[in-house]
Amino acid sequence: MLGSVFENAPVNEPERQYYFIDHSSALRAEKERKLGHAMTFHVTTFGCQMNARDSEKMTGILTQMGFCESDSETGADIVLFNTCTIRDNANQKFYGHLGSLNGKSTKNSERIVIVCGCMAQESECVKRLEESYGFVNIIFGTHNIYKLAELIYRYLYDGRNITDVWDKPGDIVEDIPSIRKYPFKSGVNIMFGCNNYCTYCIVPYVRGNERSRNADEILRECYHLASDGVKEVMLLGQNVNSYGNSLENDMNFPKLLKEVEKIDGIERIRFMTSHPKDLSDELIQVMKDSKKICRHIHLPLQSGSTRILTAMNRRYTKEQYTDLALKIRREIPQISITTDIIVGFPGETTRDVDDTIDVIKKVHFDGAFTFVYSPRQGTPAAEMEGRHDPEWIRREFDRVLTAVQDESKSMAGRFTGNIESVLVEEINEKDESYLSGRMSNNLMVHFPGEPSFIGKIINVRLLECRGFYYMGEIV
Ligand code: SAH
Ligand code: SF4
Ligand code: F3S
Image (cartoon, rainbow, N blue to C red; front, side, top):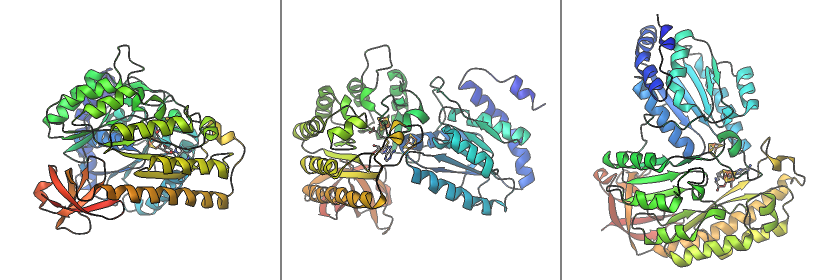
């Protein structure tokens, strides 16, 4: 009888998934009778904002299916891992974690283990999961997360492990349920995938080619979020500056920002990530004129050496990057500029690292993530000569880190004494009488206050800078 559910399922999405959500209750109830309790789930997310947003969608689907979210992985009936494969240490950490889960899983033999996301797009990873981690029940990639309800239905129906990884993205499916981590702020995908093929990077292979969502759909989502109490949206894409390139109309990123700005209720707009090669004067102007776009830009440098930038296929030079960053500082003086830097790219020399440090000193980054280069199978850089020994990498990494820390320390203090508008996010982790919030420039500030301020935008005076955050008081 339940088998006919598949035969009668609608073909179109997302109707098909809502159909499986509706029909899963009988199977869930049967399993719950066996277990003697209501089924719970726990989602663990690795990696970037894209994955965080995907996890919110999967949380929405699981909740609509009638499963209850559990605070902890231990004891949850469905454990889902949304993985990242940007660097090898992320993968190793995940395998370690999964291994330790196996020991605990004997307590709940009915537990459903799901692995999805970027690691699952790599055939090597899927092979390893299938061969060595047989307790993983469902594996799927990045292109079909919207099918979670159907995959779980299928697994509950016949108990057979499922691997469903697509080589290529399908159509963009809109209107997937989602549950936000924070009621007052939300990520909004404006595009998926990446076409840039930086030679070190795995993202284009695991996320597919670049596809922009229609502006109407994005704005509809933003209106809906605003009416649901969201004050801050973060527009998400691997390279937001090329938004619209895959669309047939003349929509581009600055125009999209202007439209989002018009939405009542949305008080702050952020975006991630900007590729320097596509950052236009039009964008700088729109940011400058805007009352809502936050004074923060994440502008990954990767390297300050033109020679290494060419080998990385970044398509800008040391001078172009520096001029662009300084132009942004000139036009929008309060802005905070943060970046990503890779140390140890094949063939990089100490002089190349000197160039990186030179850019750090010229641009005065407010913050930077520094990464050790990690070869990713299938990317051009993984085949390049000139790998470094760990000793060289440690030394050069430390030089870059020191330069970055010196700059960001001296930059952070420049706001002391200011009154800044702050979106209050949570009760301070260390002291319950304090609240923590984020300024427009993305820096955190901690100050005494009542939990009722959470989710509100308030004015805070910055009393003291402690390295990368401020202590303040409500005014
Ligand atoms: N789309 C963004 C970056 C996304 S990945 C952009 O182009 O700006 C986030 C960061 O991870 C990158 O900026 C880069 O610094 C780092 N990264 C990517 N691949 C890496 C690799 N193979 N080894 C080390 N760091 C890497
Ligand atoms: Fe990776 Fe480059 Fe695309 Fe960023 S722009 S996701 S670094 S390929
Ligand atoms: Fe990681 Fe995938 Fe994001 S590889 S950084 S989770 S796009």
